[in-house]
Image (cartoon, rainbow, N blue to C red; front, side, top):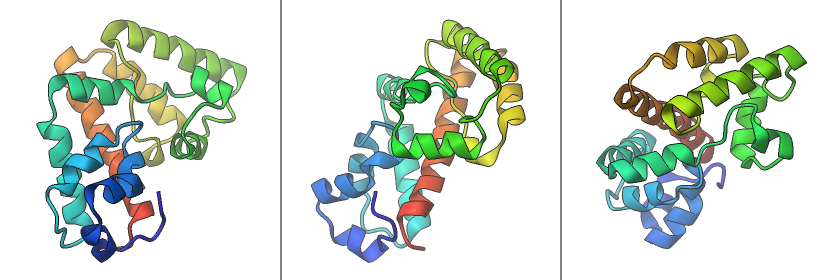
Length: 172
């Protein structure tokens, strides 16, 4: 992502350039930006974000599940192996997930396993809007959700993550 892109520059881009510029906003899913491009021109960053959300909401259930599954587990194997995207690594570190005690790591690991066993995809939360304790509480509480409710919540959280990443990448 290029920090400080202007809305006028984004509006002038062809689909490929636009997707290259904003494709990383949604974890390994540049299709979100490619679909949002169709709504150009964007009056401002808020309208652009609304187009991204519309792309998410109009996607097939399979595409939404693929997007959810493209996200790493929090404090999971990808984090330990250093295989996170730059954005995910920074976001997890901002919530203190890069410096867990052995007990905290074990708790995250157990909840990640329980969550994945129940829903078949990783737990997703906008970690920039919470902390370790809040994440653990949400993981525990959301294990009680229905599959439909949890997919909807995961997509809502992805929208929040995308909004913050968009604010980082695009000038107001």
